[in-house]
Image 1 (cartoon, one colour):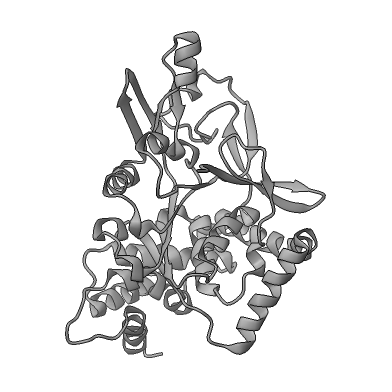
Image 2 (cartoon, one colour; image 1 turned 60 degrees about the vertical axis):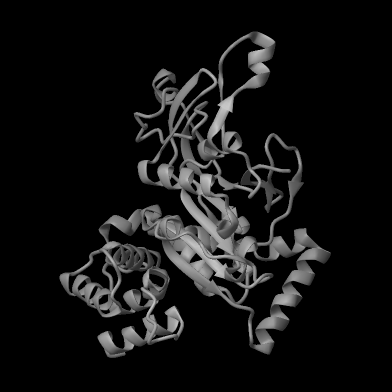
Length: 363
């Protein structure tokens, strides 16, 4: 079984991916910009890349619709990040975490640029592999008690991807909930006591026919995407053509979309820079709250997510303030998984959100 980080390297201008723990295997990844017919999923991932505080992204849908492809293509459009050189947790040199015991011992000014980690968490992963454990090699060969970081450590400041997240074992779900709430991972076992930062964007995918997601975990996802098999002939044909072209000559295909991926990366970079300066008026705040009240969502997390996601979209678009079009664009993503079940209304959650948008905003 393979565990590991997905990160980009470039060989003659062609993005490649290195996956696996300490693995030398190099594979080519389908370009993010070449994915057809899944614009909502790409939008949600882009929003999370610009503003991680929006929360994670849940992608539910049919098999074979590009869910995993989109997530694993994400590193190709993410700008590299600055880290403290030598820190096993990729801490930010500008904002070192008090939870990291490694960074204070590093010489000031030593920085490095690394790809943003996108880490796969397989369903069969053990708890030790996820949270980290005693480094047995060093313990046996040198008699030293040393901590071997797990997948949560490697995902810090990046993305943690769980395919078939609705099938994840309960004890791992509880673990993810704890870490998501605190932003730290605490390991105390086998004579090892370690506390380290673990803030990441959780991305999950799954097929709802195979089981429902626990409500506590579902609530932790800021955005929810519904992916369906394309029903338009032209879209289906284009998907097959692109996938076939990629498999026949992956390097040429990736090179053909390299400029498009760079455009997406620049939009993400631009969005991150301008995000804090985007204005959200009281009118937009009121509109978001009116929509959530009309839908009967619990708590205020819905409003917060709508506003944050709308601000991120405005920043990506280069706008100085959030407009109603931004709110309507992100409302289904932010609210469809927060609706209470209505026994008198069996219509889908997306339809209910769209209907409320039409009624509240009169669009």
